[in-house]
Image 1 (cartoon, rainbow, N blue to C red):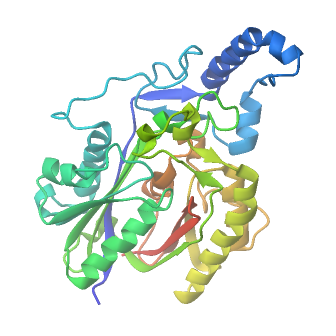
Image 2 (image 1 turned 90 degrees about the vertical axis):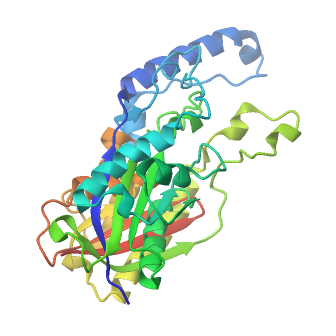
Length: 373
């Protein structure tokens, strides 16, 4: 069996930031307008009044303080409350390819590789801007890569599942150098009129180069010790948008948005994720105390602290061991754990180990054991 490594990581950060203060101000202005317009119906009990949001509520619920977005115009306008941008013509690369190219070039540079050396490109993300041709195939063309390419979606676990696919391709001889990209252009999916979810997502893209250990540049490389994946059907996180929607009448605008039953997700998914990580560590013959770091999915502060406590068997979580990036980036779906890895790996010395883990809609959980070369 070939020993596969992650030899480089990359990160694209969008040009605009939106703070909690900006989101709350625009949302509360929308609420005031809505309640005023429906005052009589609210007084008659026919319509429920909307409640204000606050920065304190957002930070307590999620730990998020800010997020990056590709387009800010409209997001903070109470009359619009969605990103405003022009649809790009077909002869111009879409936003996700632009994002992925920049993240990919950093990952390739870290690995000491050129685009033409890549023979498999996997675009793994929670949303794709089009069904076909695959975003991955267009990125393959832009980078001058060879071999083959495909898109895949396992929601927030897309990146870890893609790493497992990349390792399998290397082990089987189907590929030698694999590029995994996670372009999360998530801001257009949010319902900015929803107090419970308008603050959740940000835009970002991460990238990883995965290749055989033999011949890799060991400077930034982490050996993949093992991959584990698990899914269990649940609709508590869902998006119902479909290419069939134009065939139906009377669909509400909310049909295209991210929908989550947060309390149910916390109660049901976290025990699955924690047990999954502990079982995977046991299978790899690694004690939790031997881990230098947990690079966890960055969805929610409380979820991360819960999972880290369970896995590490500690009362207080050291944020150096389980670092957070969601306060700056928000929830970036599949890219979150990869951002944590990208920003918190430079201090590893050979032989030190960490566990990368994602969990989300599906339910899905993916974990990758890593050891610094």
